Length: 275
Image (cartoon, rainbow, N blue to C red):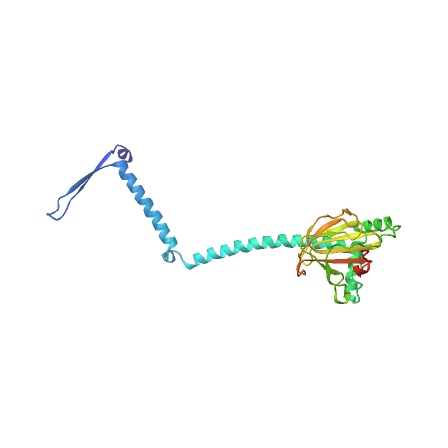
């Protein structure tokens, strides 16, 4: 029978015969379209059911080898690892950028960071000084120093925040400022007029802002919850610059770590406050 002959078939007569004399034969009259529909439905149910049984039951182990599942598992691990690597790469780039800006901010103040006594730290400071001299930052510092050379009266500092001092100035133990306990979100004010030279997040000190003042003074505010001023903004004394917080790995509770430096030397802020 040719394919074109199937198109002319409208009805089919199905006759059944029985081998036993006690049973009579039977016949069924069914249309060709209905037969095709039944065949299609039956085939679809059989295919879907077989697929689900093979993939969702232990029978799948019979049809798929262990290597197949191992390859799928390894592929999933590879994709997950690739996502983590991309995320870590982005984090490292962000930290690198932040650390570079922080390094330049510190170098603006002075090359001698903590009055070093060992040769290794001295050599490090000399390398930093070579990086600073001859670039835009060194020129900026030179202009800054000349602008404020005649200003000798701005050597008094206001308290940056309302709170009590939980840890005092102790440079011998590496604590170059004071810790002032305050609730998270307490306003932080600039201790003196100046310009913001660093305002960003660091891993150890959290959100930190550094302000350069006349006569080579620098003030540092660490562990803030948010920063209200940006780099290169002009600040007046007692202007709100940030909100206190508990950010950074070195913070162990809501407080402000506050430092004052002059010519690379840490000073005791309590001796400089006018209020």
